[in-house]
Image (cartoon, rainbow, N blue to C red):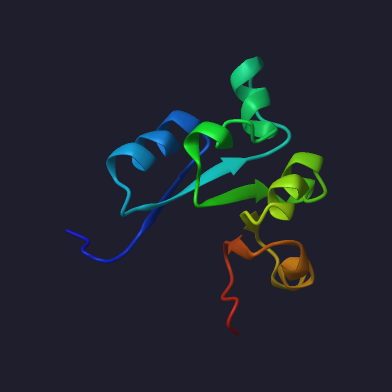
Length: 112
């Protein structure tokens, strides 16, 4: 019954692409990390952000542990909005603000 604004994010690039094609009004993000479970082309494509060529996410949410990843920095260089995930320590999140457009946090209020 929720009627407010929202966005979607997924590790699965076809889901991000689906929203691009069918729900242009919904902001979408590609979740990624350099180390994902599994093997093969799909995991490599997500980690290197190659799927962004097709899915064209509004933002990339990348595991903060790999903030210096070449592919992530390349996306940022070309103007991508990059979120770091998932920060569970307020002080560490504060120190990392310079590395990301925004942060995804859990377990603390970043405003206090």
